[in-house]
Length: 141
Ligand SMILES: [Zn+2]
Image (cartoon, rainbow, N blue to C red; front, side):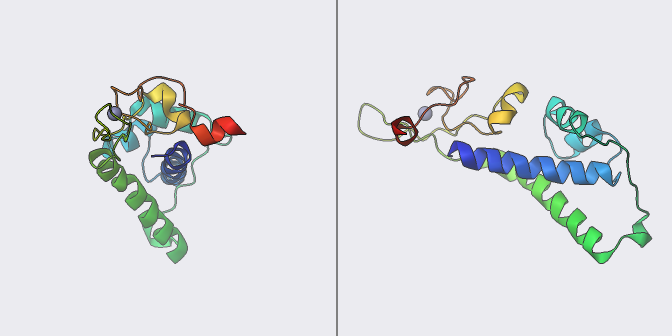
């Protein structure tokens, strides 16, 4: 997984989580984190960084079709996280025998999520390190 993809994925999760928290579909960041098996510190951090943390609860019957749809989509995005965890991309590092490493890339620790939830390598190949591994193409420019 390229670092950009990982960051996009993480940004989508964050946006979905904040939408659901804002509308008070989940009362606390912790409730949402538990529901979707996201790391609690990450969701707390997202919520803490929102400028305006006032909730705007909308009673179910008063939701506009658009809001209802966005809520559904946001929930799907977060539900998808389970799948992403299970079917992470392969590490792909070159092995000495000429093959590519087939281990799954690492899920970063909460403090690394600003780099993206998923690293681009497995644990063995430096995925758990805090630095983003530079690729050859980025080193050239
Ligand atoms: Zn590997």
